[in-house]
Image (cartoon, rainbow, N blue to C red; front, side, top):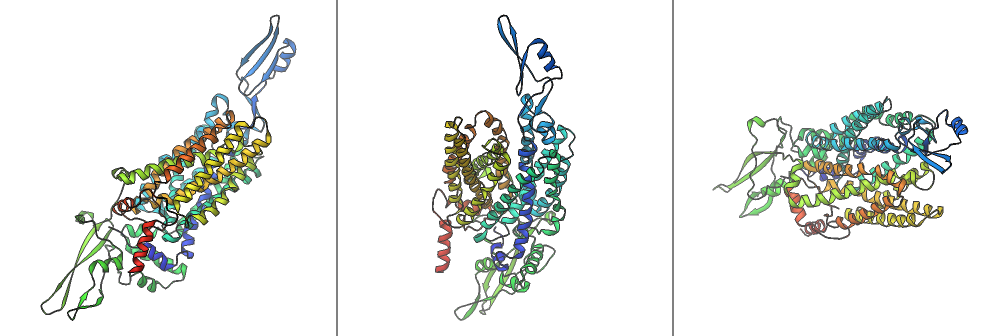
Length: 619
């Protein structure tokens, strides 16, 4: 079964009216929470230069014994002159460490996460991402079952409270627990991605992703200036400042409506009418005219939330001098956009015990002609369950699974490369605050590229071009870093190409946020995006460790990044083009679409969409 044509409703209301902007703004502003808490480890977990701290008597003992000591990062090397020569011995740092910055400037220096405990600093980010991974098993299903709004808003409120509590962590155990919970509820914000995507019709759906990238980039650009302004304060003040940027979440419930597409897909017609009425007020449209235009003028409220189709119009066609009723399929498609089930597939009748389930009414017209030449219309209502999907439905269908596996790899690749470049930005040549700011700033050209390319050449080519730019930029940066030696100019050039690669991966990464939900039916859309988000966390969890590798082998991380991006370019060629495609409603629709959209590299809209448009124009 296919639900009502929601894109037609949005076009009637005005594709990008004040109501749609208000809906999308609620999601866009929540990206500040996502950005500040997701990447704050770069500053609150910064590891400055350090070395073993000298003891109180080390200087006096050296003068008496003639022993020289060299205080390195993780050991104290002692040199003693003997008759046989210089004896060299080493001992661990017995008196702790001294840092190039005050100890309270980051949790790494406050809790001495260096040397043998260095990995504990990265573990905090891993646990944050593990929380997000755990959230992928919970929130996508909740969002598809209970709606986008409650999951997004309630998750944001809990997210704010936990981020605020993190600033008052008294020890490492409490800190990592809060980090895990922050990541867990962060995943609930992903429902906003789906909500905003479902708020615009197909022809301008890419605006959601372009705006999301624009706001995300702006918030990421603010991360470094805020950290720089608070550089002389303890890290907890910085965490508190980042957390307060989510304080507005307590008002978000009254700022946001539920997704109209989700409401209709789940048969909540009364609620859909209220949302349309609210949208009419915001967009200054006449509610009655809108309802008539979308052929809902005869929609009435009932306890069962059903469609009551009355006053069936007569056709102007005349056969043997008699008026005949319109063909039932044409009528149903015109008025409700409900398609018939596949041949041989029976409708599921709602039992008495399932009366509380959301349902739609499918009207079937049995037309007969009486002997007197009069038409007799017999209406029979049949109740149909709204199909609910789970994550396991992805594995039941080969075509869906193959496309999903490609997307899983691309999400792992993009998250690993994107966050890996942020994590290693402090190791770039130059000031760490400036490097981070520039890494965020180069995402603005990605916004421009997406705006220019997504609708013109399609989602697939935009993603492939972005990944190719990343592969080339990072590949050149690898070569320059490997051959730089002690040349500062070579390291500076390598940093520039790193930023080019950052721009490319941002374009590719951002485009898959738009493409992925378009590859799944309505009641599986958030589940499909959630599984991809789970895979994303795999790459994100590996990314923090690239910082440790970069300090030892600077050319290795960009080399790995470049190879992974090149593989993504090749794999993405097998993903169907979704540009201009109506969002699929059922698995049956999706499978039929996949069968006709195998490997192709056409630039622009999906070729089947073009063909369907031409056929309609001819008719």
